[in-house]
Image (cartoon, rainbow, N blue to C red; front, side, top):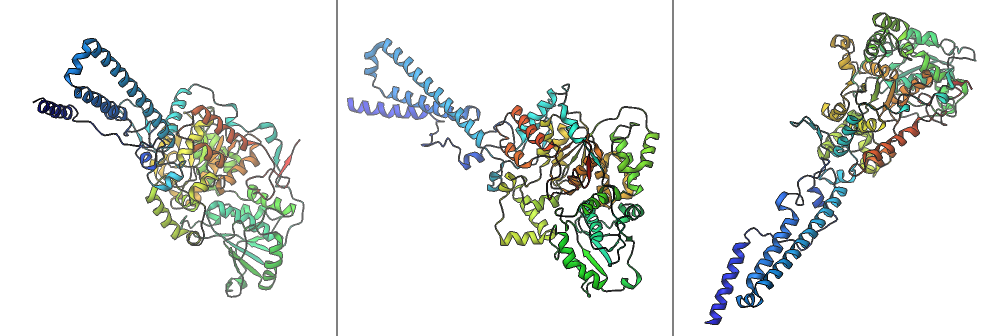
Length: 639
């Protein structure tokens, strides 16, 4: 009877223990505190706070599971004890045992809460922005930012830079009434103002162009074409040739049929350079009928290396010119070196860029309207307006406007069009869909690059970004501006064609800086109508707006527009036209810490990285005179 009774009691106790623990979950034998790829994927990276996970889920957190397991086990052990043993200890023993058990349980639960907290911190440090492997390798790549407005009116950002964007928004809101940093709207005035323009000075006899005719059909956009024109002028002088007014090649990317006379004042170009070279509008009749390709007079960019020295043209091109009487360069671009080159030829290149190329009145007049609206209808023209839009347009601006104080504006060249994005071979947070879309674009517009990818192992997107070879994304650009200290009320003019990703990609920029404008919303549809479908002429408006800005910021220092704009501001700016050139390699190292870095530290590091690029220096050897005109060939020192 006793054994039967004991077995029944044990069976009943076992049943009771099962019924008392209906929701108990077994704890895994091992928990990886380092955060494996699988566990990291479970932690969304698009918010500054950790999203729902198995560690943050109300009553179902890891500590709650552990507590339930331990409490259940203690309860079962207590019920398994024989009733006789319970009676022997008496009431006092039972109370002591109960208190001791509760203390142990409380200590264990607290311990597991501590472990949970450590795990969450580790996961936060290691979380990444995407499930796929490529985006894990490039953790600093910006994902598309979405802004949603909750009922309280606050904005929450998602994406890899969600945390930093939230910190930036908070800093801008707090700094509404704070003064901006002193050097934000100025260059180092004293050393910068020591340089003045002098490329218009000549010290040679006119070139008669007796050796033949040079024709140039320039490729690329308006900025590449401008460089090609200046190089053609220098080449005509070098070879003692007559230059035919350059033509522009139709591009499947830009889809613009504009020619030289649609953008630049042809008559001014010819007359201004008379003391330097002979320029004609067309070939003589006896040469027009020649099949230039058949007679071997066509020279393509494949035949000429980039930045070829003058000796190459004297040795290989001059004999063709003397024999055939005409040479046609198809696609010319940057086919002439900056060094070594004779002093006067270098000065001629500067003279062409800064003096001979003036925009046509149609562009100047519309650009004048753009500038006066950016300056809030001030009667005082900007420092560079006279050189950019001409005296007539400036006089009309003054006559139309009142005496209000001119408003300042920052121009931002957001170089993030699809051609730039595709050619960079970088990743920008779009995952597999983005990769397929950009690869399809490369196959059509950059077939040589596609073939190169098949033949050689190119650097990974992560490596390209760490080396500073990727353009800044719109999210990275707005974080840079906020860190530099630009006030939330700053008027920002955004230049550039259609941004890759559309208007949603600008969400962070427009949210942090609501006074964002473009030529499309400053000019009416009727005022823009003459430029419709002419991308080069629209780009000329952007060039003028950026060059005349109180401050200019670029996102890709290798961009031709940014180079030409910054050089123009140096040449005519008198040390009062600051340009922000980001050191993308240093910024990439800062952005990669976007999940952990504090805003004050982020500000300090960004300001230091940008401040170092504002130092006044003369042109480094072999660098572009269009971008660095502070050299004895283009500018003269006054000290």
